[in-house]
Amino acid sequence: MWGRLKSSAMLQQRTLKSITRAVGVGLHSGQRVELTLRPAQPDTGIVFRRVDLPEPVDIPVAAESVTDTRLASTISVGQAKVHTIEHLMSACAGLGLDNLYVDITAEEVPILDGSASSFVFLLQSAGIVLQDVPKRFVRVLRPVEVRQGEGASAKWARLVPYHGYKLSFEIDFDHPAVDSTGQRVEFDMGTGSYARDIARARTFGFTRDVETMRANGLALGGGLDNAIVMDDYKVLNADGLRYDDEFVKHKILDAMGDLFILGKPLLAAYSAFRSGHALNNLLLRELLQQRDAWEVVSFEHERDAPAGFARPAMAW
Image 1 (cartoon, rainbow, N blue to C red):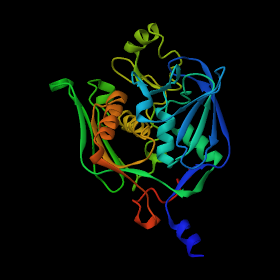
Image 2: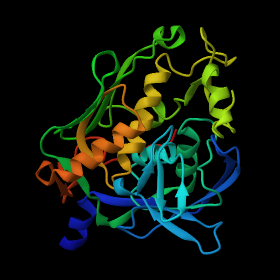
Image 3: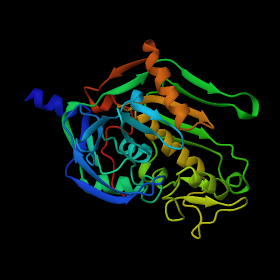
Image 4: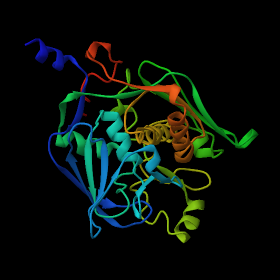
């Protein structure tokens, strides 16, 4: 009896209750892609599976699996790749999902509406179940920081100890449409709602960059239905912005996805100035190298866990 009581009190890992599917196009490839999200055993982590290859290839999510960070986060095993995983990873982080198989029929995750909200909806529709093993976190024990550039081109990202998970981000784009919105935002998993506050923020781009990107075979699937698009002065989307500070909130969304590539949720406070996929991955690698800067922990009792992790992610 005591054993059962004890196990029900621990903070448990989570997976999906049932299988769910989505079809869309890749933001950069423009290719049609089918995604099947499936439950996974405890301690599996999140594993992408290229089912379109002659022999399906599993690509487990890990900081060291990231092989490209230009415009998106790409993971690889050998020649098999999956691009643009950050929005789906962000949804998994926001909902506290630990174990998941992602079957994919092309090399890019579909962009859907350009945010993480479609993935949140998919995952919640499938249902989230608890598994009878402890949820494991990477707890940051001392500050770790990475920096690039000097003066006006400086950018940085850091992790510091915190009993919970919060992120603060500041952007600096020198563009009238972006400058007229919030430049800095902080989100705390303990007090905020990921689905409401962060998940709906869309990716964004500038018309001046689109032609160059398309000439390089990028942004082929992008448009007003899955991105915020700006000319030199204004937002071109007829329905405007979803949040007053949607640009910087999308950066928080991306950072949550990039950092969850670690394979376990962080207990830390992340802060960043003009960071992106490359610097976020560099920060993870720097953390892993400094073995005295972190430890893996679990919680025997939910009451000892930080706010925001014990309760199952609420539906919309």
